[in-house]
Image (cartoon, rainbow, N blue to C red; front, side, top):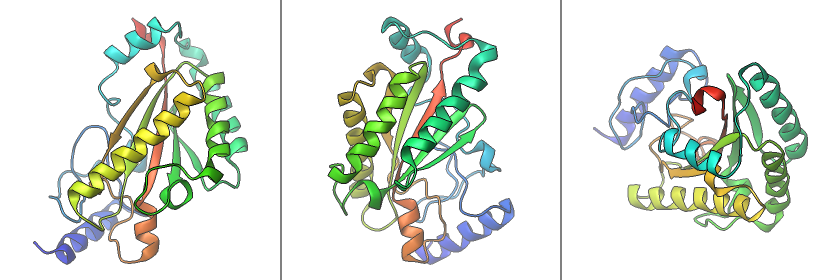
Amino acid sequence: MTRKGKMLIGAAMVASLTVAGCVTDPNTGKQTVSTKGAVGGVIGAVAGYFAGDLIGGKRDRTEKILGAGIGAVAGGAVGTYMDRQKKQLEEQTAGSGIDVSQEGNDLILNMPGDVTFDTSRWDIKPEFQMTLNNVARTLNQYPSTYIDIYGHTDSTGSDALNMTLSQNRANSVMSYLSSQGVNRARIATTGFGETRLKCVPEATAADRQCNRRVEIRIVPVTQSDVN
């Protein structure tokens, strides 16, 4: 199938969801839309975008987090814990280009690639480091969370190059946050390359910019994870 044909399929799937952009699941491995890959099952709603397990699962990561002396959040306090963190992140990233959203109790930071990195590079722009300092400060104040970092690219370039670039960018964000005191046991990274496009079809430069991004997913460590 040609690239054009695959993009047309992607557009039809987006229309069936009645939401703007392409909705995918970056954790379960189910394919939805890729301009170079196959079309699989649709997750179905924006609220399901981050459904599924954390990178590498919870079991080993929970043990490492607890081993680092970080406790779980009591069930009834989870909502307040995450709401306060969201408010602080919104205040500290205002005007930076980062979008802070929430799905259930999970927080999602969307960091556009043009804001954080130069083209085809994975070293964080010096002017963005202050913003990441603020993000790290909040993550340190609310330590009872898992932190997943996802790297994404647009469909320009080869699959291999995009996968490497996305992984390196996710690793760069992880390394920077760790350098600011965020416990490494809390963090996992993965690069999705162009396999989890958010804006489909990629008809414009704005669509490609939308897809070039790093996302940070912040998930509370709850008592149910410990038991």
